[in-house]
Image (cartoon, rainbow, N blue to C red):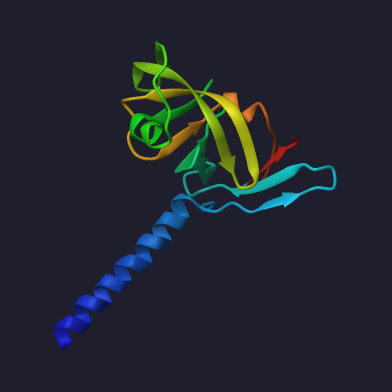
Length: 160
Protein backbone atom coordinates (compact mmCIF):
# COMPACT_ATOMS: atom_id res chain seq x y z
CA UNK A 1 0.00 0.00 0.00
CA UNK A 2 2.86 2.35 0.81
CA UNK A 3 4.41 1.84 -2.62
CA UNK A 4 1.07 2.41 -4.35
CA UNK A 5 0.53 5.60 -2.32
CA UNK A 6 4.00 6.88 -3.25
CA UNK A 7 3.46 6.14 -6.95
CA UNK A 8 0.07 7.88 -6.90
CA UNK A 9 1.54 10.85 -5.04
CA UNK A 10 4.39 11.18 -7.54
CA UNK A 11 1.92 10.92 -10.42
CA UNK A 12 -0.25 13.69 -8.98
CA UNK A 13 2.80 15.91 -8.36
CA UNK A 14 3.97 15.36 -11.95
CA UNK A 15 0.53 16.37 -13.28
CA UNK A 16 0.45 19.44 -11.04
CA UNK A 17 3.90 20.68 -12.06
CA UNK A 18 3.27 19.91 -15.73
CA UNK A 19 0.22 22.20 -15.53
CA UNK A 20 2.25 24.92 -13.74
CA UNK A 21 4.96 24.80 -16.42
CA UNK A 22 2.37 24.92 -19.20
CA UNK A 23 0.73 28.02 -17.65
CA UNK A 24 4.16 29.72 -17.45
CA UNK A 25 4.87 28.96 -21.12
CA UNK A 26 1.35 30.02 -22.17
CA UNK A 27 -0.45 32.19 -19.61
CA UNK A 28 -3.20 32.81 -22.20
CA UNK A 29 -4.42 29.27 -22.80
CA UNK A 30 -8.05 30.42 -22.89
CA UNK A 31 -7.93 34.16 -23.58
CA UNK A 32 -10.83 36.21 -22.21
CA UNK A 33 -12.61 38.65 -24.50
CA UNK A 34 -14.63 41.78 -23.88
CA UNK A 35 -17.04 43.42 -26.29
CA UNK A 36 -17.23 47.20 -26.56
CA UNK A 37 -20.36 49.26 -27.19
CA UNK A 38 -19.13 49.85 -30.76
CA UNK A 39 -19.07 46.08 -31.43
CA UNK A 40 -15.30 45.86 -31.09
CA UNK A 41 -13.77 42.81 -29.46
CA UNK A 42 -10.74 43.05 -27.17
CA UNK A 43 -8.50 40.25 -25.99
CA UNK A 44 -5.86 40.92 -23.35
CA UNK A 45 -2.73 38.78 -23.35
CA UNK A 46 -0.04 38.48 -20.70
CA UNK A 47 3.59 38.03 -21.68
CA UNK A 48 5.08 34.62 -20.87
CA UNK A 49 8.31 33.93 -18.99
CA UNK A 50 10.40 34.29 -22.15
CA UNK A 51 8.83 37.69 -22.95
CA UNK A 52 6.63 36.39 -25.79
CA UNK A 53 2.92 36.77 -26.30
CA UNK A 54 1.43 33.32 -26.69
CA UNK A 55 -2.27 32.43 -26.76
CA UNK A 56 -4.49 29.42 -27.30
CA UNK A 57 -6.92 29.53 -30.19
CA UNK A 58 -8.31 27.75 -33.21
CA UNK A 59 -7.29 27.32 -36.83
CA UNK A 60 -10.55 26.30 -38.44
CA UNK A 61 -11.63 23.90 -35.67
CA UNK A 62 -8.15 22.64 -34.75
CA UNK A 63 -6.61 23.72 -31.42
CA UNK A 64 -3.47 25.78 -31.82
CA UNK A 65 -1.04 27.85 -29.80
CA UNK A 66 -0.38 31.23 -31.41
CA UNK A 67 2.98 32.97 -31.00
CA UNK A 68 2.54 36.60 -32.03
CA UNK A 69 5.27 37.45 -34.53
CA UNK A 70 5.13 40.92 -36.09
CA UNK A 71 8.26 40.01 -38.09
CA UNK A 72 6.45 37.23 -39.96
CA UNK A 73 4.70 38.28 -43.18
CA UNK A 74 2.14 35.46 -43.02
CA UNK A 75 0.62 33.17 -40.48
CA UNK A 76 2.89 30.10 -40.55
CA UNK A 77 1.63 26.65 -39.54
CA UNK A 78 3.33 23.29 -39.06
CA UNK A 79 2.25 20.83 -41.74
CA UNK A 80 0.68 18.37 -39.27
CA UNK A 81 -1.56 21.09 -37.79
CA UNK A 82 -2.42 22.33 -41.29
CA UNK A 83 -3.61 18.84 -42.22
CA UNK A 84 -5.64 18.57 -39.00
CA UNK A 85 -7.21 21.97 -39.78
CA UNK A 86 -8.13 20.82 -43.29
CA UNK A 87 -5.74 23.11 -45.14
CA UNK A 88 -4.38 22.07 -48.50
CA UNK A 89 -0.91 22.82 -49.80
CA UNK A 90 -0.88 25.51 -52.43
CA UNK A 91 2.00 26.75 -54.53
CA UNK A 92 5.49 26.18 -53.11
CA UNK A 93 7.67 29.21 -52.38
CA UNK A 94 10.93 29.85 -50.54
CA UNK A 95 10.89 31.69 -47.23
CA UNK A 96 13.75 33.09 -45.18
CA UNK A 97 13.62 32.06 -41.53
CA UNK A 98 15.94 32.34 -38.56
CA UNK A 99 17.06 28.80 -39.44
CA UNK A 100 17.75 29.62 -43.09
CA UNK A 101 15.71 29.28 -46.27
CA UNK A 102 12.89 26.72 -46.36
CA UNK A 103 10.21 25.69 -48.83
CA UNK A 104 6.71 26.61 -47.64
CA UNK A 105 3.32 26.16 -49.27
CA UNK A 106 0.64 28.83 -49.60
CA UNK A 107 -2.74 28.26 -47.97
CA UNK A 108 -5.82 30.16 -46.83
CA UNK A 109 -7.26 29.70 -43.35
CA UNK A 110 -11.06 29.83 -43.44
CA UNK A 111 -11.35 30.80 -39.74
CA UNK A 112 -8.70 31.84 -37.24
CA UNK A 113 -9.88 32.53 -33.69
CA UNK A 114 -8.27 33.99 -30.55
CA UNK A 115 -10.79 34.51 -27.77
CA UNK A 116 -13.82 36.05 -29.49
CA UNK A 117 -11.77 37.59 -32.28
CA UNK A 118 -12.65 35.68 -35.44
CA UNK A 119 -10.75 36.35 -38.65
CA UNK A 120 -11.76 34.78 -41.97
CA UNK A 121 -9.87 34.13 -45.19
CA UNK A 122 -6.42 34.62 -43.66
CA UNK A 123 -3.39 34.11 -45.91
CA UNK A 124 -0.99 31.52 -44.49
CA UNK A 125 2.06 29.41 -45.21
CA UNK A 126 2.47 25.74 -44.37
CA UNK A 127 5.99 24.92 -43.19
CA UNK A 128 6.79 21.18 -43.33
CA UNK A 129 9.94 21.79 -41.22
CA UNK A 130 7.89 23.00 -38.21
CA UNK A 131 6.55 20.56 -35.63
CA UNK A 132 3.96 20.71 -32.86
CA UNK A 133 0.89 22.92 -32.74
CA UNK A 134 2.54 26.34 -32.40
CA UNK A 135 1.54 28.79 -35.12
CA UNK A 136 3.45 31.97 -35.91
CA UNK A 137 0.74 34.62 -35.95
CA UNK A 138 2.16 36.93 -38.58
CA UNK A 139 1.02 40.15 -40.15
CA UNK A 140 -1.45 38.55 -42.57
CA UNK A 141 -3.65 38.13 -39.45
CA UNK A 142 -2.34 40.91 -37.20
CA UNK A 143 -3.01 43.61 -39.81
CA UNK A 144 -6.72 43.13 -39.06
CA UNK A 145 -6.36 44.06 -35.39
CA UNK A 146 -5.06 47.01 -33.40
CA UNK A 147 -2.60 46.10 -30.70
CA UNK A 148 -1.45 48.09 -27.72
CA UNK A 149 1.25 47.07 -25.27
CA UNK A 150 1.43 48.34 -21.69
CA UNK A 151 3.92 46.70 -19.36
CA UNK A 152 3.55 42.94 -19.76
CA UNK A 153 0.03 43.19 -21.23
CA UNK A 154 -0.87 43.26 -24.93
CA UNK A 155 -4.40 44.20 -25.96
CA UNK A 156 -5.68 43.00 -29.32
CA UNK A 157 -8.68 44.99 -30.56
CA UNK A 158 -10.77 43.93 -33.54
CA UNK A 159 -13.56 45.99 -35.06
CA UNK A 160 -15.69 43.81 -37.37
